[in-house]
Image 1 (cartoon, rainbow, N blue to C red):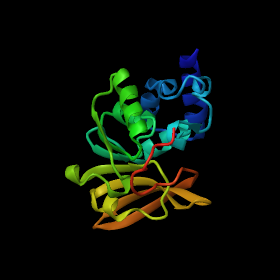
Image 2: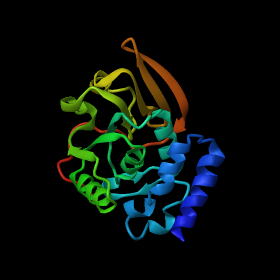
Image 3: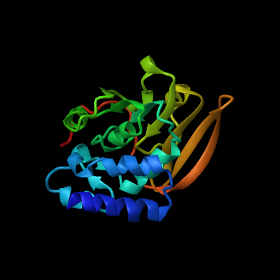
Image 4: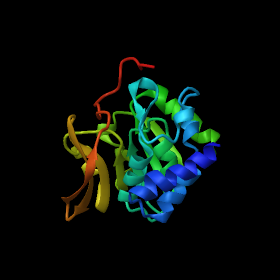
Length: 214
């Protein structure tokens, strides 16, 4: 039943809205979104909306996951820094694209849950670190691509410095009431920004929480 809903989601929500990359469509078609949700939310796994997860966070709308993945322009040989692991669903889609992923999550509860989700489904080409995502992961920089799954008014400088020349950073930028999904390419050290669409994400918060909210 859920496999049928997944195929329908790909056809209606993704292809129907203009997602054209066949590799992105195939990757999302292979990832069981329900495995990244709690039992109460699984019936809505392929609904056209974001869904709540632990720590007052969300798993993004399938279309937004597809759009962000497509906007990274992946060949399959890149190293991607993901800021905001969340449930691990976007991570799994990236791994299905054949890339290496280093993922950062500020909530230990979410990092542990995401690692369990990914391991259970056989995804093993990812390292998840519990850190302040705004600072990136200098130990493995520079990165071919950076995906930021939370909103920030401006591209954090540490992340920009960790992006390779010619690389692409995809992130929702702007004030809380007016966010725009952007793809920023580094050309000659400068930002070439392409605005993609309006969006709504949870904020990118600096530091680590004193206590995780579950």
